[in-house]
Every structure is written in C-alpha cells, then in structure tokens.
Image (tube, rainbow, N blue to C red; front, side):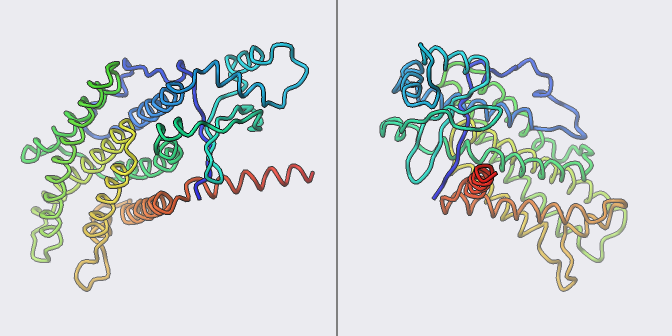
Length: 343
C-alpha cells in the first residue's frame, strides 16, 4: 500500500523563470537537464494545486483544516493559519495513508502535522495518479543524476553523419521549454506531445546507431584508427540518447503521465541491459567495460554507473507497479516519531 506525503507549494513557489540561460544551454560537450526537470516538477505541483482547488476553494480548505487543527486559544483561527502559510512557516500538502487521501498542514521546520482532513472522493478521483507521480520525483531525480553522470564520462565530438539525430534533441528540448512557459493548457499539451514524438523518433535512430556501432566496435579484426572513429560515434550517440531519454521524462512529468514515464524508463533500461551491459561473446566483459577500457582514467565507472542506473529503474518501477511508493520513507518517518515520543 502506498503511503506518502507531498507538499502543495504556493502559486509563487511554482513560478518558473524562463529567462534562465540554463534552459537554453548549447555547450555541446556537456549540458544538464536538471533545470528542466525542476521546472517540470513545479508544473506538476501546479497541476495538483489546480485540481484540488477546482473542487474546493483554498480558503474553504484552510477553514476546514483550521477547525480540525491542534492550535488552541486563537480568536480567528483561519486568519492565523493563513499567516503561517503566507510566511512559509507552515505548508499545505497531500498525504496518502491506508487507502485514504488527506489534505494536511505541516510545520516546515519540525515536519509535524498541524491538521488534516479527508479529501472528497471527487477531488481524489480528479487527482488521479498525480500525487503518486509527484511522490516519485525524488527518486526520478536520482536516476536522472546518474544518467547525467554517464554523460560526463563520454566525450561529445560532433560528427556530421549523425547531426540530424542530435538536432532532434535540441528541437524537442525547445518544444518542452515553450510548453512549460505556455499559459494555454491546450498549447502546453500539444507542444509536450510533439516533443515526445520527436524524442521517440530520435531515441529510435540513436539506439539503432549505437547497436550498429557497438557490433563494429567489438570486432576483433577492427583497425585502431577505425576503432577510434567508431568510438567517437558511440560516445556521441550514447550521450545524446541519455539526454533525449531525460527529456522524455521531463515531458511526461509535465503531462502528468506516470505510466508513460515508466514506459520510457523501461525502454531505456531494456536497451542498456541488452546493449551496453550485454556480455561480449565468451569474454565475460560487457560493451560498457570495453568503452571504459578504451579510455584511461575512467576506472570502470561507465560499466558501474550503467548497472546502477538499471538497478534504480528496476526498484522505482517495482514500487509503482506494486503500489509501494514512499513505504520506506514513510516507515522511517514513523519510526523517528516513535523514537522521539519515547525520549
């Protein structure tokens, strides 16, 4: 059973600065999609806020929470709560436990719940799996960070042969940026869907290129100069594949599509497992290991991180499928509370 709690930030907290140059990085050696992932997370939070408050006004919800709170001897309790929320000392959130979904008010500094009320069934139905998708953002960020660390291990040396595939990444990235900045929900959705289509086309081309180059790279008859040329192609393609997959994760987060996001992760995991982590012949060595071995100073990190990424994806997918989202974190929090109570 999923048990988790997510914050429901204010409108100001979900504002995204689209003049941030980090969203438009054209450093072809390395670029991070962390700013876009953060923007998608904020967009998801805003989607949850809108969904909740389309059925019950924020003022009404605060009033209900105030009437069930632990704060006593305050003449105008709802005003007191509003001030605490406005100052940032308290925050609104959503908690899921024992099959019920609640609205909660928490003290930011202590993490203690001040009040909670069960959300109406219509609100919960309207939310769908958005809270669950929000709850896995931390784990998703860890996976994205690991994928980016793979990118830091490869060199991007642009090759004209594959420029159309690399251009697909930049085209889709701009569509995602424009989607996240759009006010009109229809425009936002159309741009995100277009970006996903562009990404999937690019991903397929890159996967085929990597598979083809990998077979040539492990050929024992290959000459050193040709091996270096193919190695450059491999590194470029792997780097852009990683970035394009990350971009799809951003788009599906912004769309609020948890299952599509999981499908993206499973596709990536399957390819990595069947290509980079596949043993080459009877050598008991993987392609990832051979890439490491071709570059001094990497100490086997490419192979190690590739395996770590697939393990993390496996764990996250298992949590989602078996509805165990937040179980470990929630158990840790509850244990800490019990420990504090004993002291």
